Length: 418
Image (cartoon, rainbow, N blue to C red; front, side):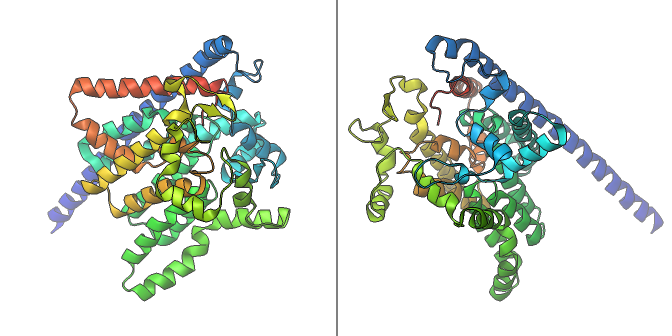
């Protein structure tokens, strides 16, 4: 009996050593891919500042410091939230539409270090992104085995992940999303998953998409539907704590708990229409095909009344393409049974919520960015890339890097990359 116990102890120790080495190896690979891909983005920003802005003269503030070029469009709003707080208006664009978790962490870092707010926000974004790479690498290896590295590379160089490296909420949100699904697969207690989901609901409005896989997890873990309902009801307030806290803040500050939703109406590129008419247009996918109709008010060739002629470099043109690519990848994962029920539910929410709420009003604007947080699609990409011949793999990644550089350079000098 004693030798048997010794053998078991040695086997457990050897297994622990192997797991530790595997973790160290995957962590190093993940951080290396994070560093290389982020270096590509940084070089694209330098290129944009030195050449694109100078040649096209479309920079709003040509004398800005370099870090500020990582913070355009929504970035300054997060900085103002961190320093000045929120404002609210139903007539003009206001900061009440931006969720608080990310800017509040930036504010905490400013308080702790004295760093400029934009620098602090950029550091927060990259800390979450680096952590996300490490976690996603582990997640991919568990889900895909030998194809995991291709999924990680797809995640690293997909063009719209440029926003993960800017002062945006994407990196924080994706980290929380991967962590929640990782926890579900590791069978963590539903209370822990609920706390993570709740944090995500305070990061982006689509954080509520995580409620669906969490609810499915509670259902599957429960011995009966009655126990599932009781546990779900008990933990639901925790699962939306971020959103609930934000709504409570806006209620006491502005007298309207739904200020974040109502103020979205001021961010639009198309004329208002009746709800029923909008529903019909969404069902027939009008926001997608109207982007390519010159007589439509959603036509890609006009951005806020200004003509756009560079089709290849217009994100307004490519938004529906990236969105449909994400939908196609998720459908492929569903058809081939590469994605599980949790990943499919999450993906459906992450793609449908922005389409239903903003697809028409914003003329599919920003939907390429919205779709980029749908991380299960990178699992499908990894499997598809793995079966390609070497030359085709090279061409796929070369094309991704090309557009990653192009759109980053344009974003850095305030072109309408949204």
